[in-house]
Length: 394
Image 1: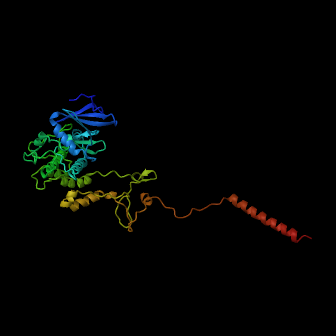
Image 2: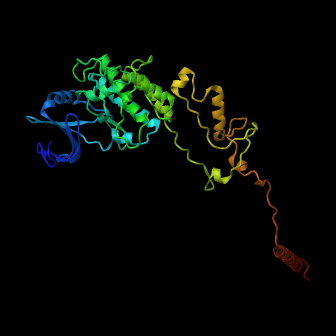
Image 3: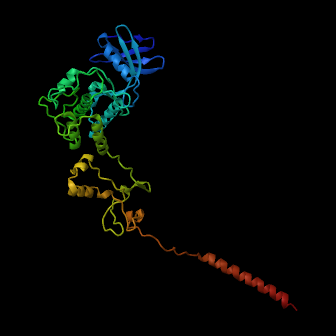
């Protein structure tokens, strides 16, 4: 173990020990040249060759779901791997958080995106060691994957091999770490399934890790949709008749499922005269030509599971269930008249208010009328006097 406060290569200052993993110690440090935080892996002599090979294979990786590699410092008996420092939650913290099923599905989608990037193009690399220690989630909710092409944690995968793997922890054991093959691709897909299962499994609050079930049976919490349980089980259990054996297939299953599970944001209330519409008038109204009571709020779509739509087993319970759900959401429909135009809102919200259609009667004051009469009289008197004196003077 290296002491904190040590300066590596006259540039990287070790500040604190984050954790001591299976193969190396990980420190938080600071790059004194670029003035940015870094994570420093201190690799002992026994693992120099494996880490050096993995670093060379991933040196050009650039993906938002993969932790960046900054530098490599080689000393006679120690290797220092300088990486991006990610401020966020490790897998233990995620286990201790009440995650919505959408969040778990989205974590799976993001892990798959990192694996698909590593396995595509000229990279052609499998992960091989996708354990909880390889997963972080930053403060923005972005999942970051680490430890590509490193030796697998044999104890972890052997312990979980009782779940749908018939005691066979790995496929294609003889290949070098990270090298891609059909077996390695299947191992990566199954490893993602195992991570998602641990986030969905019933467990005691505050646990740091989930133990593999001794009887090999998967047990999910009650609030997990059956579609998500099915996808995870198909990834984990190799004997499943619809076993998911590639990351591409797992991603294709999780992506639409995450979109379906994503919570709908609360709509912004319509404000009339400074009051929300619900407070302005709780009355219902009848749109022209329909005779059905609805309110003046926008219609909301009723989501269905992509898997349920494909298999004809909608979670809404078929046509009858859909009708019941639609009835439940009936207050969110738009009032329409026969010409598909929005019914005027104000008269419907305030039906007791009479609309004035005629001009109000105007009243002329009496003094003003008397003054007008006197002015007219004086005018005529002056005209008469002028005419008499001009034409009839002797």
